[in-house]
Amino acid sequence: MSENEEIAGTIPQEDIEAAEKLKNEANELFKKQNYNGAIELYTQAIKKNWKNAVYFANRSISNLRLENFGYALSDASKAIELDKTYTKAYYRRAAAHMSLGKYKLALKDFEYVTKVRPNDQDAKLKYSECNKIVKKIAFEKAISVDKKEVNIADSINLDVMTIEDEYEGPALEDGKVTLKFVTELMEYYKQQKKLHKKYAYKILIDVKSYLQTLPSLVDIKVPDNQKFTVCGDIHGQFYDLMNIFKLNGLPSQANPYLFNGDFVDRGSFSVECIFTLFSFKLLYPDHFYMSRGNHETLDMNRMYGFRGEVTSKYSSQMADLFTEVYNWLPLAHCINNRVLVMHGGLFSKDDVTLEDIRKVDRNKQPPEDGIMCELLWSDPQPMLGRAPSKRGVGCQFGPDVTTNFLQRNGLDYVIRSHEVKNDGYEVAHDGKCITVFSAPNYCDTMGNLGAFITMNGKDLKPNFTTYEAVPHPDVKPMAYANSFLSMLCQ
Image 1: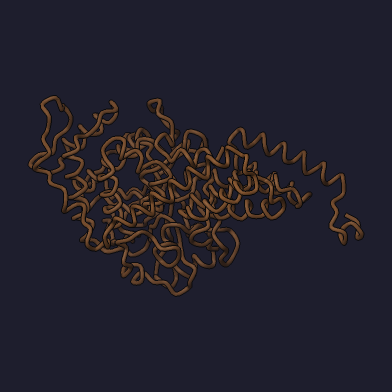
Image 2 (image 1 turned 180 degrees about the vertical axis):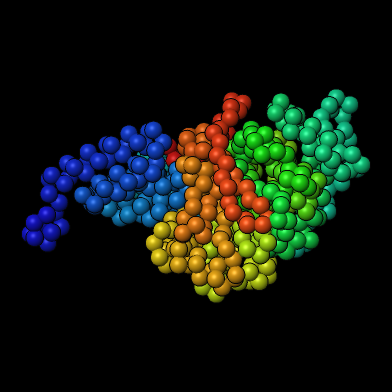
């Protein structure tokens, strides 16, 4: 660019043409669901021509697909800044707002489009649908009592629930989960059958009662010669969960597991996943561990399918009970005082200790900042220091942040999940920050491997097992997700 062109803010024709070529190449990658590759090319196009709103809007939807809601929001806002008449940019920003649970802000975007384009029927439809969601949430809040007075688990009367003669599925024995029960349950689920609601409610009530006895940070002791397994996100991919047990053995006192959050949402067999995992938790409470993920929350479940799936297979009351149970899931686990495991990552402040985590009041929906939020939402970055989160929640933390946290707390390394990785895992920050993701071919589109970590109690050295996705019945991911969000992301 010449000095005169730079002063005038004009862009040379050759850069405009090069940018358009890059955009077209990026569009092809997007169609192939290579969203990271598409983002890279859209970024190059923006460097050539930063005045084109389409490039920002296209990068926005690519980031939406990768759950980088913060980046998606920023790009959509930039597209609107460049072209206030560009309807798609408003839709992208609305989708980002909705993904972050900010429904009223999404509604404002639709309202603006309907005002400037009063004859746009599509905009009217989207405004109407979004308004229904906002009003529904407002109604739910209006009729709810203070959470400390509400206890769904205590309000359920199991005695009035009868087991029909035609029910041939697994049964609790004297109201307890047994190995026979959970083994039969997994086989029953493979046949796409449903656990009786009486047993389902009993499991949830018992799990909640047990989880309430736990601290927010759970200490795990692994003997020197014992294997211990850590799994990452499962996201409702029940048949891949079964494959983990096939490859690594069923959970038992001799084969303990930790599942590190995001058991549900997106995958359409989330009910099957969570009842299997909760059954193992009740069967082996001291050898089977579960951390809360950012998808064990009401806003995520409302948008990404779990709430819809539970309501479809059981009832909205059970969906409410799940929210109540998830509030009691521990936020982190510490293995032999040397390895900290949490779903998301580290913190925006330098002075956080294990004791601070232990003291967190977790019985709530996560706040938008602070220790609880960051444990569920943060991500590592290769650069030193910290940066605003690409997700719009939590923070991004560099290798120096990890090193300082480990030294302050006498730890060797951290394990986290939360991010799709092509190989199912990633070792970062000089081996001190490990990501494990256990849902292969995430959403039937990403083509990634899944992975789990095994270690022994003596040296806690991480060993990685990777695997491909296995076939599942023809029920698409996001089948129970909020249809309005899917409509926005087209």
